[in-house]
Image (cartoon, rainbow, N blue to C red; front, side, top):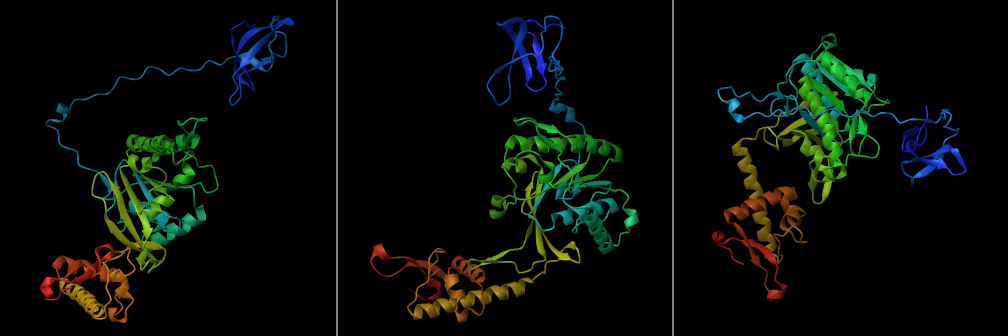
Length: 436
C-alpha cells in the first residue's frame, strides 16, 4: 500500500497523523504530521521508504471511526391521553422513606452504621419483614459491597437474621457481590473530559439485574464505585442518570450509600460533594449520631443512639426522623417515651418559675441579664451557672425565657444610663406588677 500527500495515517505511539510532504533530502520518503496529546504538533518521518509499497511497522492507515446513527424519533405524547385512565399509585419500597424504581442516597459518616442499616433493609426485603418499624416491598436483592469483605458480610447478615428470627437458609434471594480490595468502578470520565463511560463491571452487573430482577439494589459506597470528581456537577448528574437507567429498565430500587462532605456534616444536611448529588436523586436520607450542644460544649449522651432523617423527598415531606439504637449488632427503632400533657406542663411550669426566681434575685442584687445570645450576661447561660438553677441547663432555661416572653411575664427594656451606653436587658412584664 502506498501513501500520498494528505492521506490519514496512524502511528502506534503518536496516534492520528496526516502525510504532509516529501522529505526534501530524499523524495522517496514521506513526512507525517501528528497531533500528540499534551504537546505541540510535531513531525515524524516513516521508518522505511513508502514509494515501493513498503509500510513501516509503526505506520498504518488511520482506523475508521464508527459514526453514531441518527437519533430515534422523539416520543412525545399529549396530556389528553391520560383522560379516562386510572392515575397510577405512587410506589414505595419503604413507605414515605424510599420511593420505588428510582435512586435514593443514604448518607452517613464512617462508623455510624449506614452499611449495617442497608444490610438490614436487604434482609427485610428478601424476607418480607419490617425495616426500622416500616413496611418493605418484598423481593430479590443485589448487594454490592466495595467496603466489607465476605467474612464481615457473613457476620453481619447472620446477626441480623438471628435478631429477626430468620433462617439463613431462607435468604437465597439475597445476592451479594463482595468487591472489597478489588476494582469496583462502575463509571469514570473518558480522557480529560467530563463525559462518563460505563465500565465492564457496570455491564456485567446489568446482565445480572436482567437475570435476577431484584426489587432492591444496594451500592456500597459511592467513593468506591464512582471514578470521577464528586465536586463536578456534570459528572455527578451523569452517574446518577446511569443508575436511574438501571432503575427504569429493570424496575428496581437503587440505594446508593455515600459519605457526607465536611460541609454537609457541618450544616446538618449530610450532603456529599456538590449539590448535583442531592438534586439528581428523588430521595435522600441521612443517618447521624445524636449530638448535644450546651454551653458551647459538644458531647454524645448515648454512643449507641442514631437518628435517620429525611433530608430530601420529592414525593413526600422532609424533616421526618426515626430514632434508632444499636442493640446487639443491629439498629432498632427506638420507642420514644410519651410524656403526658400534664407532666409536660408541670415540667415547663417549674422551668418558668426557676427563671423568674433567678431574674428577681439578680435584679435585687443589681445584676442585669441580657436577651442577646452573644452577650456575656445572656440570661440562660448566666442563670445555668447559678446554684438556684437547680441543675436546669441553658437549653431548658432558654425555652423557659421564650415562653415567658410570649406570655408577657418578661420583656426587653433598656439599661439605665446615657443612650450611647444603654443595652438591652430583661425585666419583669407590666402584668406582674414589677417595673424596671
